[in-house]
Image (cartoon, rainbow, N blue to C red; front, side, top):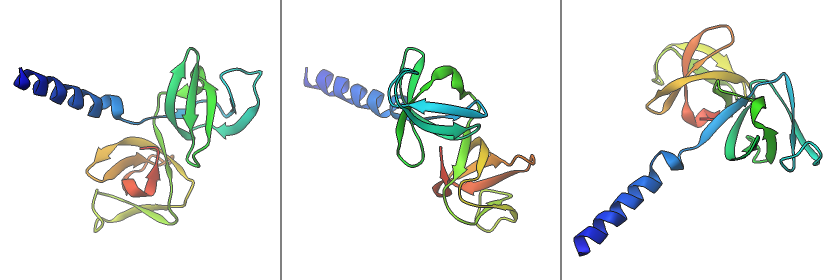
Length: 147
């Protein structure tokens, strides 16, 4: 009986630490989007964000989603105003995007804090990103927000 209880506890721990605990990020879909204090257009306007801006999804409630921006501000947005395409924001100054996921790799381009890039994937401690010019490169995860 103890073995069965231990197995159940182990299985429960694995489920809790799996994908359900993973962060979900989305991007603003419209050119300009208003975010609110509560899940209603009649509530107080909290933020105005622009297309591509990455936000962390906290919880969905009907047609509304509570999100957090890179400054830690929480607000509500209509779910239809979030894009499926993933974007990331550079969180450090003077970041060099590299041709390969390695500090010694050739620099591809340099970006400043606040620049938004398309998220392509992860390779070790690096994110594969696409610049609006189409150039694909790698940036350390520690230098990005939205991953």
